[in-house]
Image 1 (cartoon, protein in one colour):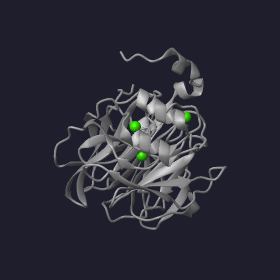
Image 2 (tube, rainbow, N blue to C red):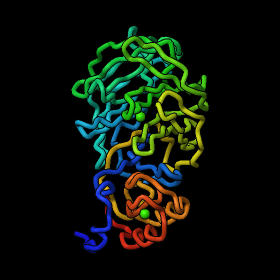
Image 3 (cartoon, protein in one colour):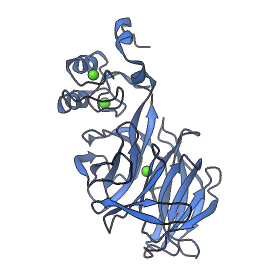
Image 4 (cartoon, rainbow, N blue to C red):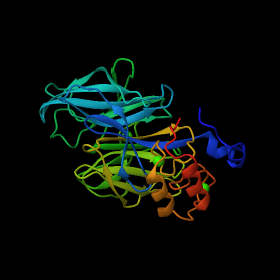
Length: 321
Ligand SMILES: [Ca+2]
Ligand SMILES: [Ca+2]
Ligand SMILES: [Ca+2]
């Protein structure tokens, strides 16, 4: 066990010790942690261990089970795929197949788009089209069981719902159309939607960070990480800021924030303490946050300053809890 100076512990505000969040991603073969302040190289948690022909997609964090759930397909052709539900261990990255969701060859199945956990329902929800990849205007919302991948119909949308992002602060579900480039507010009770802002195109999965009150998504084609501002009432989302390219062994297809124990020295929140944390502190110099939420704030004080450089060095190469 690593020794922590008593005075350092005493200086940390309790909010910082309570909880922080990490942005996790899945690429073709790995669970990774992404620096959601400035992108750059990922921290690899571990291999998913899936068959080579199975391609992961959207992921969501289930706060009760403390596991990620994700969709994956075995692609025969774009309109001829078997979609399965995955369970992923945040500690090791190991993925197991919960069950088959659907096969795109047979109605009323289709193309699985996105998965999110909806706090107010206490359920995982997927969106999917009725009949294959090319049906962009009749997606369905269904709950999906983390026990056996069984589905229960909720409502039918008139949107292409490729990216769902759930705002747990205001119980708002956003849909991001990667082709039409708009954000929409989704009502799961009847499938209706309302315009929430213009976005940018070709995005893969996304996730909401409650402390920063921002949405994040990643470019489908080049792994650029985007951050989106949300209005105070949650009802509109602004065009995104490009934070930079996420550097991973392959394109990141799923994104989800998950709570993590506070890790002293981990300024960029990727679960490791190394040179990237010095860079993160310098890039966010003198920024002020709620303690425990902001990139660069290695010691969780709420301000990025010289204390954070010291804190990174004191915890150099420490294993994060
Ligand atoms: Ca997600
Ligand atoms: Ca780090
Ligand atoms: Ca600090």
